[in-house]
Image 1 (cartoon, rainbow over the protein chains, first blue to last red):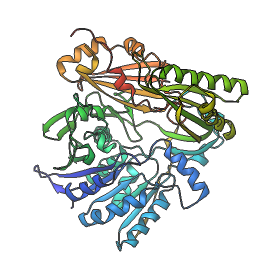
Image 2 (cartoon, chains in turn purple, blue):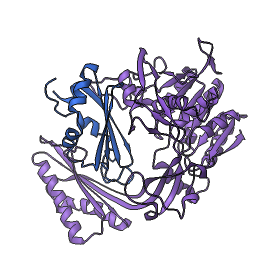
Image 3 (spheres, each protein chain N blue to C red):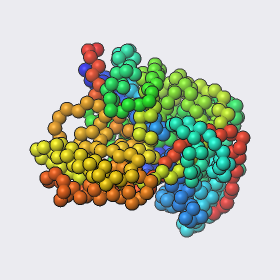
Image 4 (cartoon, rainbow over the protein chains, first blue to last red):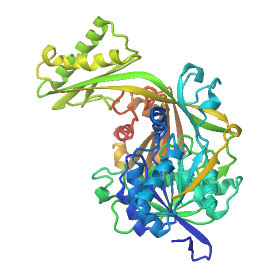
Length: 450
Length: 102
């Protein structure tokens, strides 16, 4: 449908969240298109490290490097979205937005959907810009010069998305952009917000932030039986926002969908991954959430207002991906009386073996799953079973692989009654962050029609 | 009384930083959270974590106290050897904190 007239006679828009991560369910997006009377549907599918892995895929195949689930998602949503006039925006472009657009065009043509205007937002890839430069890492100690980058992507803002919409795009693929910008782009486009409308941009950012993790707003990542019960998680409904031209919004979900959008779930999502709530740094604005107001105005309806905005930072955050050796791991289970003592003995044996063999590992971790693998506080009690786990990082794959082999050898050489060994070996692609001047980043847009 | 009886929490991560926001279920309990949910008590409760620094932010409008634990995630999700490399389980562990009488 086209943009709707509100009771006040002003034009509001309806924006849905179609995915909150790359592995998210597909049906809730289709349900939102069918029943949400949406104008826009945004899919956030790009985790911090994903783009570095995608860059590796692109090095092997120039046509790869976008979200591997893109075709499957597009096959499910393109038909209904175009029938309902819903425009789609996603960061599924990952390390290759152009190839993502081509893939989506291919799906559209396969399905006989011709005439769809698609666009790719380029310019976040700054690997060539930063090569040879040195920068201090912002999220831990160290400098860029100590790493061997395989990818570097700047967090773009919402204005390139708004521009692509203004140029008529119905389906837009980006690489790295600030997650809330996927949602802020349509607001800028529909309401004509300017680059210095800090309050409006902050309000729109708050709405985008609340939507960006999709089901985490409507009862996902929330249930705690007996304390916080959520109905229908197997058919969790994803959220949508009814946004007014002043940036105030009502968050809701479609009738009949599972989950629950409550004041408590909205509060949790409002603060999710927010560090200093007075300074939520985005490419387009610094948002202040300390004055954010959430009000329950009906069943599954939360009004959001009150965010304040400050001028945008002079720098953009850049995620730098780099190779960081290999992690090898092995696990083995012990059950019954003395399980903890036998599991601990298993760990002690592997520790002694690593020293005896002189394995050149950089870091080793010993866990008893069931006792202390995730739990970091004081522990009381005696579990019926434990799983001994050893994980280590090494610069070479052969050394890392020895960790699994040493755990497997515990079958015949370790404590009594060990079972269910699993081993794994993976290459580490780690991510660090730097800041660069925003003037060196020049986004551009490419259009094509199916 | 355990924190879980009067509060709920959500945990997130940014690089090597863990973020745990604790919310009062009932606004009446927010002053208790503000008073007793101190940086020192959080550090002591999550004793195995040993972050480099903990920042604490009070959000009266949301009835929440936000904790930012720098250097708490063994280098961050992309290189940590931990099973729960995101530290997603930390908020639930924090809710086991003893809060004394209301």
